[in-house]
Length: 338
Image (tube, rainbow, N blue to C red; front, side):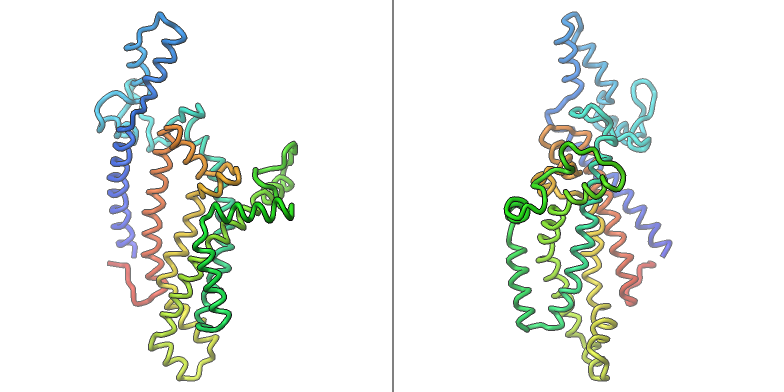
């Protein structure tokens, strides 16, 4: 197992370097030059300055001088800046945001925590509902309750997220006045401690309900399909023929086999707590990582975009490794030690 993990980590490192270079090269093709912008601002404030000198100064300060490979390795932290310092990703520097005027790490820290706060509860709620519901529908395949759930999941799966969000806002915020329309805290209130946590949770409840509802359709159908395939296996028929109770057959035999395709879905959802929900965060005015990423794309704030892209690539590689290891745990026929 350790040898396999070591080989996979080397493979992940190679893929990470390759993808990071491709992403860096693509964003360097965009017509955005913050060194030129800074030089123009200085010239506008002081006409006595020479543009070429100031442009070269800001290029060296931001590490934008040199060819593409030099700039890339400087961004990684393997090549020094003009002053001889190393200040890249390996040194913990994700760059500085042009829009916010702060280091990228400071910009994304709070939104990332908000996204984790929202999506972690959403993932737990969705998995806690869909897994038992999918197992129940598979065990009662063809019944009226199964057909009713299937119709509901098709309707939920077919509706866009923004339509569901608008309907839920109209129902729970406008008509019933149970939850606020948007925002992350009560206006004019300066809560602290546990009271601040409760106020934040209250404002996050409606987005959490929308996120959970939008996840039920596809996930329930996925779990149901996996369980139906597992229940049709020969070992399940043998277990039933031996006189085992149906609950024991489903719990100890069928569910273990159904876990093999479901485990990738579960791990994907658990890793998804870091990725953000752009649509929901924008609709409800939440300061999450998805909203920050969207705003950075529209404002050409490439330092934030590059940092987030690298973060998502890293999550994808870790997710693939965890899925392969989980397969070996849930299915003894699979070995990952080679």
